[in-house]
Structure formats: C-alpha cells, structure tokens
Image (spheres, rainbow over the protein chains, first blue to last red):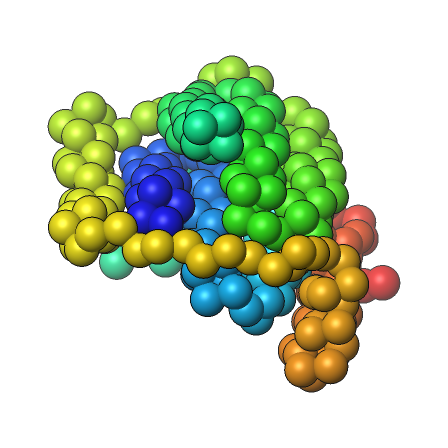
Length: 97
Length: 176
C-alpha cells in the first residue's frame, strides 16, 4: 500500500519541480496536470485500502475539474499569445512594481 | 509476483516520463511524454481495482486534455527561439531541492510507518456498475455541479479566446 502513496508523492513532487523551474507557460500547465495525477493515484489507493468506492468517485470529480481548468488555462494562453506574442513567463512583467 | 513486477514497470514508466515532461524545451515533446505518463497512471489504476477510473483516465486525460494541449501548441506555432529562456542552473537546483523537500516530507513518514495491509477486494469493485450506482445515488449533487462547472468553463473559454479580444487589430475588437 505504501508503494502507491510513495509513487503519488514522487509524481506530485516532479510536478512541483516543473511548476517552479520552468518558464514556458505550457510546460507549467502540464506540470499542474502531473500534480493532479499524483493526487488521483493517492485517492484511488485509499479507496482500495478501505474497499469503498467514494475515493474513485472523487477521482472522477478531480478529472472533470482538471479538464475544465486546462480548458480555461489554455484559453488564457491563447489570449495572452495574441496580445504579447510570448509564452515565456519571464516576459510577463506588466504587473511588476 | 507477476502483479508486483507489472506495478513496478508501470510506476517506472510513469516516473521516467514525468521527469521527461518537466525537462523538455519543446512543448510538443512534453505533451507526448505526458501521454505516456497518463497511460502508465491508467495501468496503476488497474492495479488499484479501479477499471472504470482507468478507462476514464485514458479517455479524458490522454484522449481529450492532451489533444486540447496539442491543438493549442500547434495553433501557437512556436519557433524554437520562442520556447522561452530557461531559468539559470543555480535557481533550478534550488527548485529541485524544494521539490525533493516536498517528496521527503511525504515519503519519510510513509516509509517509517510500516506497511498497511490491503484486504481482499470483492469481485467487481470499481466496475462501471458499482461506480455508477454510487455516483448517481450518493454523489448526484457533485455530478450536477460538475455539469454547471463545464457550462461556466465553456462560456469563459468563448469569452477569453473568442473573436472580440484582439487588441493588436485596429479594425474590429470590442465593437462586435
């Protein structure tokens, strides 16, 4: 059982690294998806441990929310690219100081 | 045991492809590696007596979310010099330490706790019928709220990325 939770933690921390250490906005959104997948594995593992299906229903809800969030995030990327011609978060400084 | 080996293969593929995702400069390569990761995670779900969730993972994540990603990446049509400059190596190492800190803060209490035993699952746990029964009986309210969420997302996406949002074009924009 711990091996599933350790795998979930590994995927989550790889996603954390991707969000922190990359500047390409598309890669950042993909890393958020990695984090969500890690959490899904943990939820499914606990659902298996307690032999209840509630965890799996939660996983389905997380998947639906992730899909919605990716759609809106990519719409923001498209709108941003139209106005600024960049997906590099280092160039997005108009709110700075 | 054979199922242990299958788990370790699937877990290894998932971790390896995840590491590839966060290190690719080209977002198309990142998306392809992410597909591999999602399929490996679906295999993990099969180990966890969740066949319906595994199918949903492939259909929703690998089949819809990544396809949407690839649409947008192809639409943006980035040249290699537009991928974005990287973060300097010192800061990247520090971020790797932060991520390792997150991992250890979860993994160390887990590993020192001793293994939790898994009971036998009843036949057909996680089947379509089982998940459907609980989804439409106990969790029908979250289900309907998710449909509301999707309507809101559709409206938001049309507003954000639709036609009236170009500030660089002089003719139209806002006056539709």
